[in-house]
Length: 501
Image (cartoon, rainbow, N blue to C red):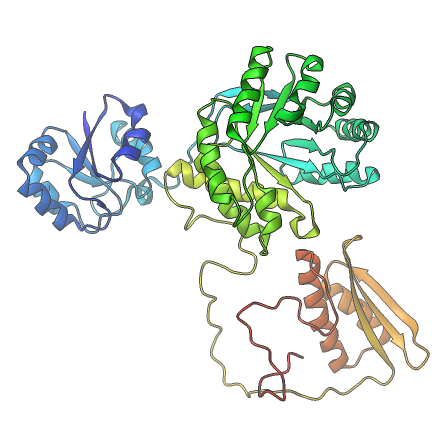
């Protein structure tokens, strides 16, 4: 049985790429239109009817599969070609699964896309392993793309273990131990030993000098991160089986360093063309990555320059950068949590790469895929609540509790919310409770001091805000909003708006 895949000029290359594994089982038939998914089946049938060459080719196959995004029932095309016509998948990456489904005796539908008939299809991505960093297999070319997270040199030595554990728990596969900002060779060695001691499967270490390189390797690093400038200093101490991460903004220097390593028998090389700074050389650096990919070594995509320099929430920035990394075929994605705004960047990068990889495997955009990167937004409009006649309430003056007042704090180090009741006028603490569940904290404090209803309502509202601040790692200030969207106007009683409390 031979299957004819109908496509357009613009999509033909991608269809040929994904259908390569079906060689001999399919024939790709191009319709002379730029984009076929905008057409209806009736329009497509008219185009085929007007072209004798198309009719002959389509009549020579046993089954015709049209793109799943073409509108309408396939009947008009069947009448023109005299062959059974079915809707294929919307996403090009699912074409092999749809064709195998047909060839194994399954059926598709004339009006519904193949995804709706076959159900959810998972696509397993496999890439040859270039080499290992410790226990970690580095893909020769991504996807999949592995996350490397740096222990920033500014992290105190006594925090290295906890930071490395967090990065690994959030999905990092390799830990890069930084050595800038005054980290001595001795300190670098201790840091590497600490990371090795917690069982990190892959460890790289920055080597700004020969002494740093020697200390890191002796401490148990599986490889070094260095530049062409330092390469000459460390070449003679590099074991042949060690890994070298070579980074530079100059492609000629990067290529020269790569060739030098190979000439000395060091074949485990990762190239970092360095993603540029926004508005300075970001666009230019994308071309460097394209050129560097021709050298045949795994590429490291460095996200830090962009996530740190762009004044926006990094999880959205990672979503865009991950798509770029996957499209460029990077094998590794570097996260650096240099400042507090980048904390949990590892988890954000892992999720962003998951979405980008799934979309790439389907040869589609990420739109419509489940994503945990929606934090302040969501993809669908909130549902309307049931309609109930309600009285409009504006600002209501509170009845102050003359017995005492409430303080609410968020302790990010301990990971708890704390509620304190102070007795007036002494300001002595009458009760203090802490935990992670706002309702339970409220119940505990109310039962200990007997809050009146209005004060209890105030406590509940503040605890809800504190809970959001705790979960998102934001600063909580009592009686102030936790999140202020850019589209929200300042409101006040004097300005005719509504008092937030």
